[in-house]
Length: 146
Length: 146
DNA sequence: ATTAATCCTATCACAAAGGTAGTAAAAATT
DNA sequence: AATTTTTACTACCTTTGTGATAGGATTAAT
Image (spheres, rainbow over the protein chains, first blue to last red):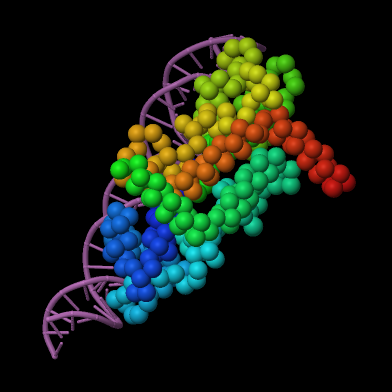
């Protein structure tokens, strides 16, 4: 049970984009450098985020990225959903899944409750919160180094 | 992000074993039939549960399985750990994982908190609770059918 | 001796994930 | 206008892990 790299890298990319205050946005290339990711692989990540409508280019093709709405209005679930159809930790939780013991399966209830917990957690966290925490952590780190 | 079938089937197998009141235990073959699983695949599941010390044979080789301790003392985390080294939703949460931004990574904190939530959830649920729920669901189902 | 069950290892097929390549297109720069 | 730089998008490749089967060894009951 692992979360995939796309969602994880996507989250880190979004933090970088959210942090950028420059009106010209941030280049994909720069995100790759700052987060130490392959720029080529980041292609997919950034593309998916754009298709999902979470980010956009400031000018045309050669231009930086910015968020399409305030970071406080973007939840981690939104970011997750740019890469996954949703959150579904076991197949039998989806609609149109046939199973005899569906109506009386304690195991299913167990997984279903966990699935809901994860969804709630993803909904409860905004990009803004993560950005603030990021800034805080870096400040703390700076002090410890000195 | 999916939970694997081993853990899921293992949970269902454990419910069947916990439910069995016969002193001779329950045959793997019977678990397979009741839960509609391939007996051959269940081989691995039952084997892992036995190696983990959660179940044992009543007599010798040809005999039924019983729990090694009361269902109320077995958590779902115990069952999970029979199949997985633990719960670790992203690699960088393990010890001996090198990462530059380890000390100041809001994303890591986000995943870490979720990881802890899942562990707590797994610890909080006992096999006994699931068994009781199972019995309750079946009773309810019986009423609805009639 | 035979049968029926578990024990245990090996193997396989398939899908998904992680990542690279390459071309097209657009805009900025020269 | 030519060149450079960057994104846009598709295709592909390689590796890993998962779900599952095969099959012989072992043990105990009949």
